[in-house]
Amino acid sequence: MRHQKDWFKELVVYQIYPRSFKDGNGDGVGDLKGMIQKLDYLKELGINAVWMSPVYASPNVDNGYDISDYYQIMDEFGTMEDWEAFRDGAHERGIAIIMDLVLNHSSDLHHWFQESKKSKDNPYSDYYIWRDPSEDGKEPNEWQSVFGGSAWEYVPERGQYYLHFFAKQQPDLNWDNEEAREKIFDIIRFWNEKGVDGYRIDAISYLDKGLDGRANMEELFGTASCANLEGTHRYIQEMVRKTIAPDHLMTVGEVIVNSTRDAWNYTSASRGEFDMAIPFIPPIVEIETWSPENLKKTITETYEATKEDGWWARFFSNHDKPRQVSLYGNDSTCWKESAKMLASFLHTLPGTPFVYQGEELGMTNIKLPSIEDYDDIDTKNYYRTMIEEGASEEEALRASQNISRDNARTPMQWDASANGGFTEGTPWLSVNPNYVDINAEQQMKDEDSIFRFYQKLIGLRKEHPVLVYGDFRMLTEEEGKLIAFTRSLDGETWAAIHNFSAEECRFGHEALAGEKTVMLSNYGRTGLDGDSICLKPYETIVFSVK
Ligand code: GLC
Ligand code: CA
Image (cartoon, rainbow, N blue to C red; front, side):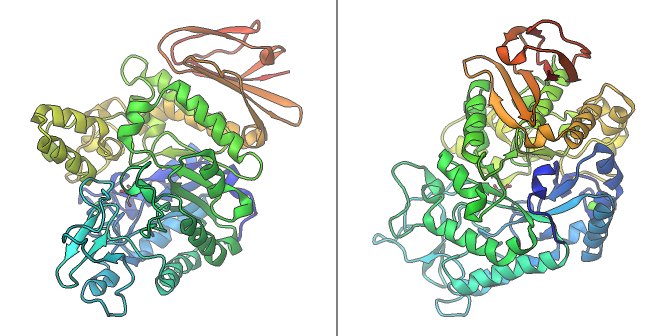
């Protein structure tokens, strides 16, 4: 499909994690048939793009992020015909399709790797990153994989190690090999032909490994040592020029952002890389370091870095992070208020908002009773490492519950029937027991629900270009848990104030002087008097000022 140049700016993207969205055949695993059943729900919510986490053939060591055949649909998810039916149903409803491209690595069961590991001189021998052992017979260097443990794995047939930034079943592809690159581009061309509208491109900051000494081992840890090297940008530009730019397909890169320069490099139109970026921050780092103060800083920085000719993706949640209402809000006493506030905050910022499945219902984290109940490879490795380092089972479990990516992966809560209406079988991962109170059916009936609030927000963005194209000005540079800003376009100004705490706080600013019309409130406010406002716990208020 051919798109207008800047069409991606007007998207609201909904991320589906297919395994957990809706089971269409009762085997306990979400699938494409289930996704088709829920297209009307997505339409009702108002989103206009769906990013689906990988649906390609995969042994599921990392739930689809280990692809064994890029041209096939995973059996558990259905067939190519099912995928096409989903595509058509989405397009009929004005919803664009964004596929997840995992191109840094493949599965070890991909036939390229199966061949590559056999010998040093077969046609695929150079498709992956192979190195001889170091002088003392050990790993070529000390790099750690993102999921823990060495990033190198020894293969006796070749007498060599291969590099894997993630699990050992996810060998890194060798982008320095031109033939391999062309084979990768062919995959993209195939999906372009199938009518895809855009791509979310996985873990793409490490294409150039810098193993010749350019990786920064001193300053950055593990695999991040080689993030964002020159060759990575060169390969991304080549890929975009050859496969994506001609049709203005939308791209969002999942990247490492260490500086505002990185933000600009990846997203400025003049460089021809991505339209926008999703910065990757390990959940454990995010949990330990996030604060409203830091949030203010990064919001302003990314805006400044990209405002001339770039753009940014705005998200709190995805399949790699804890649930947003549990992490950034308050999932007990201020559950509804804080879920709405977080939504309002994201959707009033400059950039394209991303909604992760279940976020629109205020779905929360889960604490599974034993490590056996978890599925996520990252959680299991993390638990094992903690035990090895001397933690008690209880400590290790508690820490794992906190960081686990399974928090975001528990099945969608559709209604109050068994398993939250996700499946008629046994779900592959436990459904959060709070589905009885938190579910889509109930919220669609309730005018005051989180779902209805999202619907309103998405509608506002469609109707008022100021929320999409308006200039941004941060009003709360100073310390504090309040984040207030304005958006302005063609003489129109909107203000948005968000309280990131359970305490009341007062806010006033000269930019708020004038007649105010309330556009959105999570406390049912219909009017505002005076120039200073007392905000309630987790209150959000959006208004125009004349
Ligand atoms: C990305 C994905 C994550 C996956 C990893 C390896 O970070 O979002 O789920 O485990 O890449 O592909
Ligand atoms: Ca199924």
